[in-house]
Length: 315
Ligand SMILES: Cc1cc2nc3c(=O)[nH]c(=O)nc-3n(C[C@H](O)[C@H](O)[C@H](O)COP(=O)(O)OP(=O)(O)OC[C@H]3O[C@@H](n4cnc5c(N)ncnc54)[C@H](O)[C@@H]3O)c2cc1C
Image (cartoon, rainbow, N blue to C red):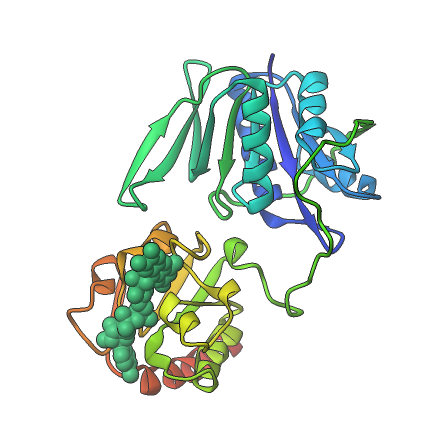
């Protein structure tokens, strides 16, 4: 067995950035693991996306109308990879867990880095709600891992091409059935994939006041996040919640506005690369995690920051 098989996800006819990141990392890994990069693409009429994957180093794309463990197991049977990777999305985590169980192999979840040591995949992942990082070597062959979005840079597109293989697999007996897929508001990037996030807490005090968070996010091209307290108070919907019982995010920039920094919130954003905290309490725990801290009233600071960024980014 050799090479890396990735599960590529797409949305509205476009490959997700996180899948391109995986393809780029897979190409780097095969220089040490030997073999090629292949991909599983799930859905109807997905073959056109295969050429995009070809341009980022994927040599063979297995297309399946079904996102089932049957489909992934069949792709693994044909590709014989030594490593299988997926994004740590709901879809990727569910699919790899079921397939790993079926194949009787280990699975490293929510990884933030991947390396090769002595011919084996070594995966770095946060533990204890992100308080520590551990390196694990998933057991069995193929080795399996899910990776958080924004862990690696997306690769430059080249001129490669991918062979397309259509899989025919039986449907799986399942206790669940997808009845409907609802699109998020137009233009809103899924928080888990977002490269920049501006989050608001309970201190915003109303749904209407959240507009100052949205304005700053808009100027920065960022997505809007929230603490659970803000969600529970009804200021914003649950799909914006960051934390233990919300989304796990991994952006380059996370701006926490009036968020205290409870451990359950940190659990969801601890791996953000740069954290900026705005809080009127200089002792707020969020400042222990922040790279940059602003002590003051967010109702004054956010509009001022939005104006400044608007000016600077226009220049
Ligand atoms: C099982 C469990 C799961 C949980 N899961 C999550 C989760 O997924 N995500 C999550 O976020 N929480 C979660 N929580 C809740 C968590 O413990 C905190 O209660 C929550 O994060 C607090 O939200 P907050 O920081 O917005 O509010 P608060 O703790 O009330 O903090 C508000 C902060 O705003 C500051 N502030 C007030 N006014 C201003 C102002 N005008 N300008 C600037 N700063 C100001 C205050 O100094 C304070 O630091 C969970 C709790 C439990 C028990």
